[in-house]
Image (cartoon, rainbow, N blue to C red):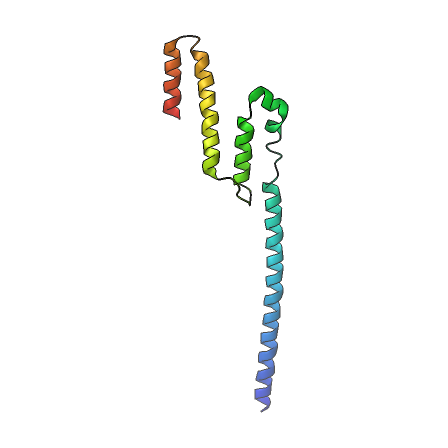
Amino acid sequence: MELAIAVLVGLLVGAGGTAGIVAATKNRSVDTSATVQAQTAAQLSNMDVVEPVCKSDYIESNGNGLCREMFCWAQTNSTTGEASGISCDAISNINNTITILDICGQQSQKSDVAQQACHTLFRERK
């Protein structure tokens, strides 16, 4: 009888201790992971990286293409996932096409052959 009581007390103490340790560890790990996730979200949604190219003086002299593209890429990396990579690729493609047309347009002042060579070069690279 004494042995049965000792085994019962041992099981209760062991089970209670194990449950207490698991509960304490679980709450701590959930709190820690939630804190880390919140800090990561705050850092990813920080728009300091796009600020220089989205200022009005930069946009007036260079256009808004780079600002739009960087803002889009920053949004794809945020935890909200507001923009998709496909949308950002489309913006990037438009920016690249505008750059190609500008550069090849400058070559047209030299000759039509130079402009065609420019278009061929970019078409092969793009």
